[in-house]
Amino acid sequence: MDHIVRLDSRQEAVLHAVAEKFVGTHQGDVMKALKEMIVLNGHLQEKLDAAARPSPRSRRLVG
Image (tube, rainbow, N blue to C red; front, side, top):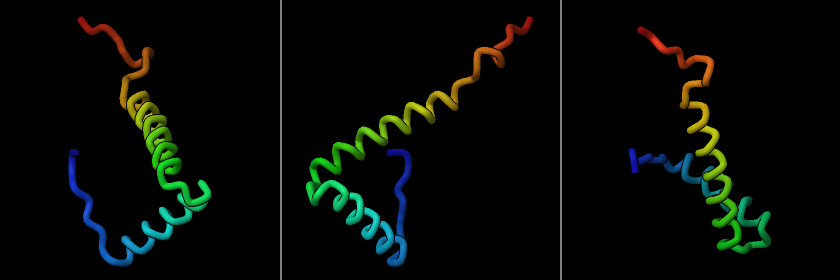
C-alpha cells in the first residue's frame, strides 16, 4: 500500500452511507458487492495504467 488515508468522522459517515447503498444494490450480499468492487477497481486500474503510458505518437527516437 502506497499511503494510508485518514478520514474524519464526517468523511467516514459519507463513506459508510455509500458502502451501504452499494451493498444494497446487491440485495445485501456483501460478498457479491465486494467481488464487483474488485472487478471495477481492476478496470479503473487498467485505465489509469494506460493513461500513464506514453502514447505511440509521443515516443520519438532521439539521437
